[in-house]
Image 1 (cartoon, rainbow, N blue to C red):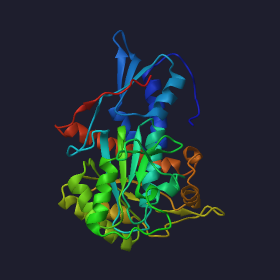
Image 2: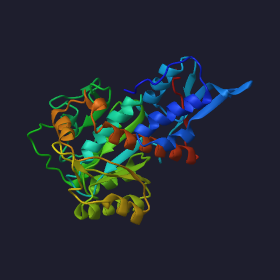
Image 3: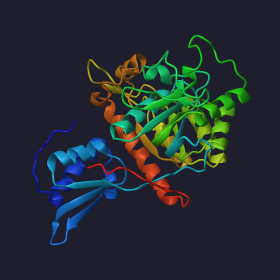
Image 4: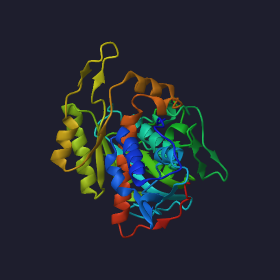
Length: 358
């Protein structure tokens, strides 16, 4: 998707650095450049011999390969950032992220799906667990409504796979979409644990868990019984949403789960007729909350009819070329960096083998 400015077999350091900066700038991710290491030739320090990425960055890798065909590109051995072990022997997962909100209707499931798509576009192995027991949206947003996971032994579920190659499981695959899940908290919590522990997730770089809104039984069950790297909190700029997002952050702090960042959804609306930009739900609410709570803002997403249509249609085929793609990709890259740094800092992290990308 990036236009080629020049193409050469020479890998001059200045040229490589310029191309890296050009790509990362498009995603507001220039800060990632400091984590990309260049190895130069001993007899010519201005000539790059190889390059090492901190984690999978397929779009940047492909861009560099199209310019510098002799450049060797590898990826660092990945460390897991999980805060505890888990019981699922059919899951080898490096990072598990709970995506939460204090209230419904702020775009949490939309954010989950689109971050998953962005991480997948970068070459990562991605899974989504829909833990919103009472209102599962993931089947619709991935275009998988009406489907059911297979099971080979009557117990372990084989997760469904989206057109993009994202694997997922949801209570929405297991109950009639026209029926309401009228379950008390303990029953819903057990269902969530089963969805995680009895699904053959396999090897994943990232598992995103779409939580229901609030700070009740399901959220507590997740934080206490399942492995987590951290949490991502989604809000809109308006005061009502911010008040509930603050409660979600407080909950994660109390149960000692790292809040990796805040996403401000529906930040701005751009009129399709005149181009006027208007903050319909308020301005800088997420930034103010993040400052108060000492967390990072990982990004902002627009209020855009095209996002709504993409989610309702469950078709991600045009996602990577959509105008809003860069907003979500910027968030996904910042989240990946937070998890990378967290894994480096946790002494219990263990190395997981990867495949060289060149």
